[in-house]
Image (cartoon, rainbow, N blue to C red):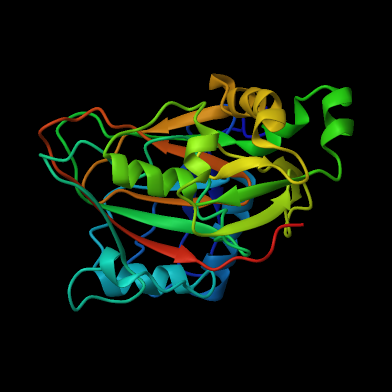
Length: 293
């Protein structure tokens, strides 16, 4: 597995911090660093190296303000503005509020996905800060899409080479209107709700590592470009299942003040909805990305 490595220390300008992998495939917990501090260039560079190696970084006990969260995000790139209905009233335009109230049935990100792939330039990554968490439940799972691609057969790789897929917001819109998660086979029904559509390569080359990653997800990938939904469905269903095999994943249990910083270009994630009658509130910033190639 690509991520398996012993605990290491990374030297930076401010201090040495510890990088401890949490699973064989993906994810590492970082300790010995205070994200509320102003980070110098050497520290940011060391964190970026860990980020590119482990794909998602986790930090504990970081009671950051919104301003500190924004500053940390800006250390890694330009932040995307958030739609007004997802912000706190009068809050920073870069802070996305991810909240499930005790009475809510749906949660945010309740199926395997990569963020905003229906956009021409999906986000580079997201930084999520836990403000309030349920006593149990509400974990997030992450899946390594480098491994998802690398473990495909040579025949499947050859078939996917040069293939593009249509990504839309139809399934998300449909869930919001229905108030529940519809069956995963209902791509045709989902497509009737779409308002945004774009196409991306099915196999994406990471702009920094140059590694190839599978780049389809069940929430936003509607079909292959040039094919019908019915023609696309069997292969897409296989890819959805293959890309989230347990051995490609890690699971993170949140505590108040926990932070996750993930690479949207080579990961999928899934926020579990297993905490009825409890509140879960997170604040997130999204780093602007580039057009997949």
